[in-house]
Length: 350
Image (cartoon, rainbow, N blue to C red; front, side, top):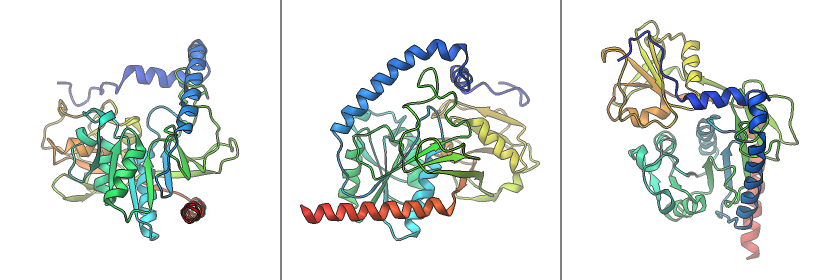
């Protein structure tokens, strides 16, 4: 076992290597550029195919997604949007692919419940089911998840899709594209750059962590501010002020796309863990072992807690909070009102 002061193993050396390439249009990026053109052609063909098969969920659909590979912070935006909808007299539900679950995804559509295992529904849906209090369904074909959700919960009148910006087989009324503070990187498509599809393209709104860049395309751009909550929770249902962990010989672990961001936000809260572990995104924690003795606090992300708590219920999970300007919420209200009116008009015409 490494000593507490030894550095954590990288979440993925290949992932970090690609991220370095994706920051600029250097020699390695240009070497991969021909492959990215092939990827772009395949992506365009697949997008056209899905548009021809596009189906409606019968209620307004908000897609929270991204156009870059790796984590951009979609799930916290989904949580914030759902909280806003609940506070403004909507009855939201959530759908997701349920990435990372250990089932045959192509044949599986199921509800994610607050006590569902991440291995069965995916870690993000498990987190969303626990944290939002709204129905959550997962399926590789999101229209199947939407229909199953509405069949069981007919009162749901708006659906939020956690991820799925490129899943164009599902008709959508609002598209929110989320970016981390690295933006579009070098602007190349995969694998020469981080883009899953060409950008800019029209979306309802682009949300950027920190200071947004100059407008790219015609879509409205908004800044989102992220910070950790002042309180942490453990698997026993207990809570603690994060400030109480400051100065303690704690250990921090993160199995997210950008674990260094979590450690940095802990530092912003005045915490300096004696040991950190950066693990691969969607890590299952089955073989996880601590660097420090169990008597010292273990701090984790809210997403990781849904798996970590099974064997380490004493771990303190720190929720991620975000703030968006009122202008964004005004835009969302207007888009949903227009979508509802359109759907009702179609129903009357039928």
